[in-house]
Image (cartoon, rainbow, N blue to C red):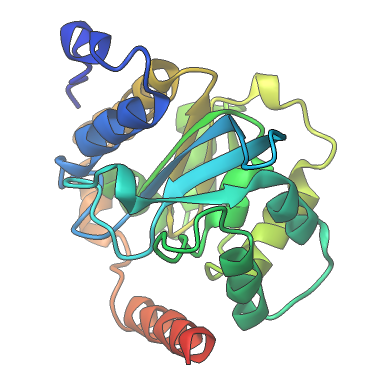
Length: 254
């Protein structure tokens, strides 16, 4: 997979972190091997001063339904990071309540509804986070031996999370599995049968990690082409999950 990072293009965003977030999000979104229309999400953590002169840590995460290929600054939802981390530490809440609380955590009430995976972005302690549904990675994790294949390719470089439907339960699972880990030793995270996260202290680090990690999966598949033919495909279960999430959003906005 080709790394499309352009230092000359990036130079114009040196003074605007959110514009840089838009740039790298579009790099990911324009590659259909990483995301399809509306899929995947990205975020950046920024410290900003509110109306009262108080410094606040804000998570800007892709708004629900926005397309990474064409997203602009208004497509990102600003959320109070402190509130999200409190939510992530709760033992159990419904997805409807989680989404309602996320809406209440918006520092701009006019911003779009945040991604259902916003809590995951809050849990990961890096400023730049990219999440895609890379074809090569999902193909590998959808095989019966997906867990073993991922470990064979990446060793201990990545966190490996068992499949949990997106929502609070997934966020809680990641929270529980990462409470005592050394995040500095991780380059990314794979959610089995779902997708891959990369993260870093800079936009370039997170983006480059995504490209490099997905390239390893592509190279492995190229050398083991029969795996692609035996991988389980995302069909009815995937559609059922999308319908459930849509119902949750309807309840919240009603």
